[in-house]
Image (cartoon, rainbow, N blue to C red; front, side):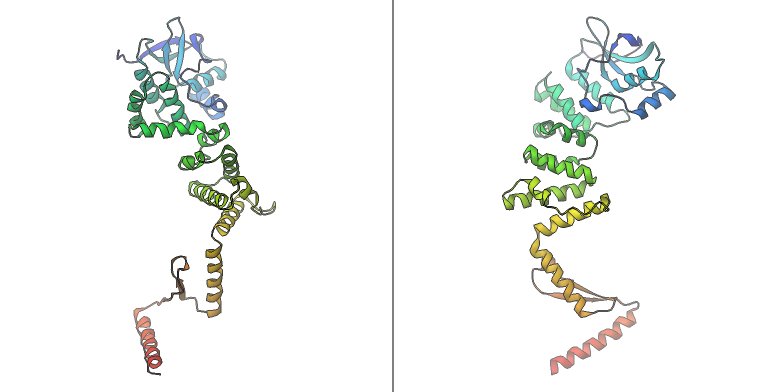
Length: 316
């Protein structure tokens, strides 16, 4: 059956706000925030919710539950609203496809919400059918894409909440899943505390895990060794301190080579327009001097002097 949702004038009392059959929110995110409540109080319900008529009477919320709750909290709430109503006879695939389209109007779904959506979808149909809705999220309709998406539901609830709130970069989920729950929590706790950006999150996870495996200890043990700066340090300073310390611990030889090279440059006492360069990762002692000139004539004059010195050195 392929029927369009019907726009109806519905008594608010006939809608069941406690029915979470299609709800995609984590428990801590099911209530409307203050901004949404103020918006609804000021402008009303501008986007009709998506509902499904129950065979026994009344309506189930398919999408738009937070808007309905916000409307109920504006007080005095209206007795009626307009909503798009789906027939109870629709096939699950069409219901979920319509739900997804409605939820994406002027918004987006977090990785966790996407995973919850497909988890509920798989209760209604086979994976072969479920993957056909992945393109609606810009994903390829492949079984492994669906499997990877669902894996984030294996994470602990605090990590899912941080992921939903964009405090954790989705790109590190695969790395987190390879760790123990205790290790994941230790990393995410520090990542959220220091408000690390995406690339910094990846660096912290990679370096901390590498150090832990090298030393044969849990990741949390490595992080506990970080000599945290005093209370006067702000969040950016703490983040910089952690990253520097992890880098130094993971690459001691490189850090020592950098220190020696810096000392070497200081001994040369070169003028500001001269730069010393080294090979990548100090793979050998090859060194270059880079000179900056404001004019080509200056560079030509300087090179003539250098050429003369080199010629004299070879002759001697």
